[in-house]
Each structure stands twice: as C-alpha cells, then as structure tokens.
Amino acid sequence: MQSTAISFSPSISLPKKPSLCRFNINPLSSQSCRFGSLNGSATRKNNPIRCSSDSSSSSSKLNRNGWISVPPPVPERDSEGLEVRAMSVSESAGETPKSKLTETLVLGSLFGLWYLFNIYFNIYNKQVLKAFHYPVTVTLVQFTVGSVLVILMWTLNLYKRPKISGAQLVAIFPLAMVHTLGNLFTNMSLGKVAVSFTHTIKAMEPFFSVVLSAMFLGEFPTIWVLSSLVPIVGGVGLASMTEASFNWAGFWSAMASNLTNQSRNVLSKKFMVRKEDSLDNITLFSIITIMSFFLLAPYAFFTEGVKFTPAYLEAAGINVNQLYTRSFIAALCFHAYQQVSYMILQRVSPVTHSVGNCVKRVVVIVTSVLFFRTPVSPINGLGTGVALAGVFLYSRVKRIKPKAKAE
Image (cartoon, rainbow, N blue to C red; front, side, top):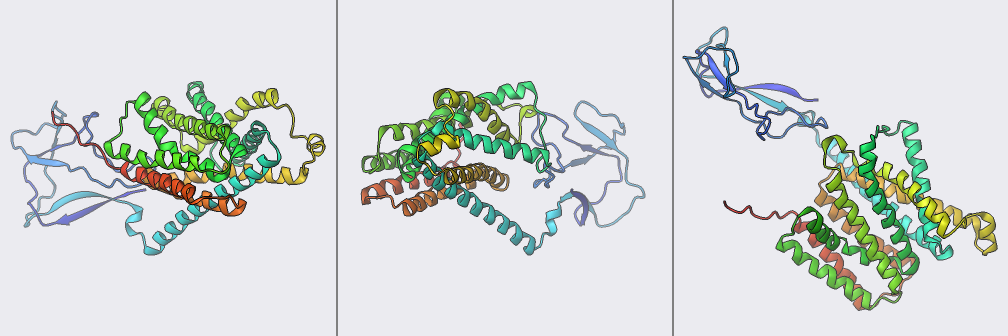
C-alpha cells in the first residue's frame, strides 16, 4: 500500500487566480499518472502535473484539451512561495538495512535451492535411467508426481487455484505439447550419454531461441547477440568431437530438447499475448504439468507398456525399493527446481535469471563429472568451457538494445 505525502518547498507563489491544471487523460499516452502497480509496489517515476494561470477562464467543465478549472485556494496566503507537490511514498521507503539483508538472504537461499534441486534431479534421474531403460515411463512418473503436488497445493490453499477458461486451455495446449516433448527428449539424452555432455549440448538453447524468435516473432538479433552465438556453437562442436560417451541418439535427443524448450518460450509470447489470458508463471507451469501427464500417459502405455510394476522390475533383476525411491526423489526435485526457478524470476530481472541459469549449468556439469567420475579430456573440457562462456556472454549482451533508426 502506498501513501501520498505532501512536500512543501520554497519555489513560486501560489496563484490567486483560478488555475487551470492539465491532467493527461489520453489513454494512448504513456505519461499517465500512476500511484502504484498491480503488485502493490510504488511507482518509481512521478508524472508531473502542469499548472498555469488563466484569469479569463473559470469554467469547471472539462474541455477538449483536457483542462480543468480549479478554484483559488482558500484561505489565500501570502508568502515567499510554497510549492505543493504530491509524492508517492512506498512502504519500502523506510526500509532498514536489516530488511534488505533479509531479502538478500532469502534470494540467496532460493538460488541455493534451485541449484541443489537441479543437482539431485540430474544425479538420481541418471541412476534411474541407467537401471531402467524406459525414458517415456520415467518422464510420465515425473509428470505424475508433479500433478499430485499441484493438486495438493491447490487443495490445501498453498497457492490460489486458478479459474481457467476454454480459450486459455486452447492457448496453453501447444505449450504443454512442447513442454512434454522437451522433458522427454532430455530424459532420452540422459539415458544415452553422460549428464555433463547432455548439459553441454543444452547450452545451445540461446541459438535456438534466436532462430525461432526471428522466424516466428520477427525479433532479429543484434550483432552482439550473433557474436555471442559463435563460441556457443564452436564450444559444443569441440566438446562433441572429444566426448567419450558420444552417440548420435543422445546428441540429437538433446538437440531436440533445445528446439522444443525454446519453442515453448516462443509460443508463450505468440499465443499468451492478451492481458486477460495471462497467467503467473507458477500457475502456468502447474497447469502445463497436469496437461503433460494426460498427453504422455496414452503414449507411454502404447509404446512401453506397463513396465514400472514390482513384478516386472523384480523379473528384470532391478532393486524395486531403490528404483522407486530414486524415481520419487528425482520427480520431487524436478518439480521443485522449476517452481523455485519461477519464484526467483519474480524477484529478479530476466537477465539476472539467465546469468543464474548459466551458472547453474556449470554447477550441474561439474558435480555430475565428479559424482559419476566421467572421463573428461582437456579438449573436451575446453569446448565445454567455451560454450558456457558464450552462454554467459549471450545473457549479458541481450541487454544491449539496437539503436532506433532516425526517421
């Protein structure tokens, strides 16, 4: 909530004549007066209210020019001059260093949880896929656990249950499709190659983002963005040439994951453009998770059958309790790290979030190499490092806006 404070500073004398104050009421103008945003935060810039004296006009009606006659102040007061100015004062204006420290600690904790959940997801998920070679079923288990968590979250009022219209479901459906495919292709790649190599290939996501945005949104990159793509592509190529676990199935699955995941971002901009259709990120992800379950379940039963039963696992010589435990932990971490990611995105800028995502990929690659003792040659490490450096550079140069052409 905001309060309006009145500040008095010596400047000009109050007019004794009727004043005409112009308020910008043009709905197409960007200079309208605002005293707060939708989320309750204070408006940082105050639009000035311009006043001028006009002794010939005393009408209180609004004319075409948007001028309103204001009667002189009562009682009149002679002085050197008082300027009356309305200021928007937010609750955070008197924020103490302690509260800022608390906010920083909360944000740091969220980043730590984001990385930790991602590390555990990749480790446990890889262990499951090494023992159980059915990536479609593994992906379905993750969507199942995620859907149960979403329903519990809504039922227990931990997060407000949304009211979704039919038009919104139609708009969300393509997002759920590519989200399902993106996670399925990621699991297919993790089942074929090392975790570190899958994430090295997934470092090419900015390349697919630039290409798809140019093709479907007409958003053409700057020369700086194009330059940052060179080390990304070159680094991934160098790492692929020297990867010990390389195989084409794992490589193309990771590439397909890049394509579908970035398609989701493009579709979000293309279809969810109307304000009345917009949803917050956590709600949108929750709905997509449930829709992905219903989309993947028939395909999983048709292609892989029911392979997750205790009888089948015991017959295959798999430790049932161990597989179930690791699958459940991986699914929990999968849903948790994405929820935390959206919570961070609500607190920081997209550029900061992108940089954090780049650092997260580095942490996942390093921890997976150490945990699984993945052999890494110097050239392979160099290629991975160059690719990740390119991703970091890309996240920085995205802030550089092209100069507007003079008309």
